[in-house]
Image (cartoon, rainbow, N blue to C red):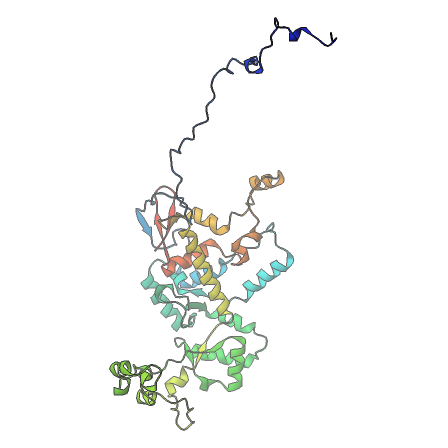
Length: 402
């Protein structure tokens, strides 16, 4: 008999199978049946996404409309309004704005080169009565206190930016800063402007061709837009060869399909031959007098900055909600770009490393608009009719797109 024989092989001792073994439960909840978690549907659907921030679900109350921005401004007369608009156009450079020396010099030089002028829309926004303001502008223009500048083709209706006012003293100062012009030509131009206070045009016969070239080069003269005779742009007459019935029956690609070989001449056109000097009509004295127009240096950058700033302010209101209205204090904060304040609380947060706003150098107000003030841009939009102010009764003044 082998020594490896054990009692496990005996018929009296049996082992329990592995299927009958049960692990001792360490928790009283181990005997409960397990179930998969039920995925419940969301009770509220997600709101649809919008391109703009709908901050106001309901329209703001508007018990009354504010027609002018002169409630707290002690301005008397058009002259003070023009001076106020020029002096409050830009904000001073902040001490802790994040600008380097190159950017600071660039901003200051850009501001210095802009003309000292104000749009008529801005003047109306800061005045109480448009009728009284227009009468005062006419009286001051006759007295050579200010001059009205017109830039054709800059806007339509009330939103035009081509009608500006400049004080005669500011015009003299800009002319004195032109170093490349002799004193005799400066005085000659000023004497002509004093003798013609209401005329926007300048007669070329009053200046010699070298003087006109010099004044054009420094930006005080420009060629006015020549309005052609309306009779030369009349509708092309319909001749038998250019009638629709004749053209429709012609074969495609043939001369008859375009009216025949003489369609241009029969309709009053030419064959592209340049007219000689004897065939050209000589301009009348009235046309020659309107060849030149008074201008201001760097008027183009000024009007471009004004137009872009007005459009940006209106776009900020569109992003505020579907009602296209926003409280004025919130609109001011958005125009400023949420810059860091200069109060003691903001400085303490900055020292502790907490967020206290962005630096002015990183905002669009200083990157693109060179530090334009919110009140100046708002007056431009109100005067041009792009926006209007109204009393809300709860959150102060509101701004709404018209």
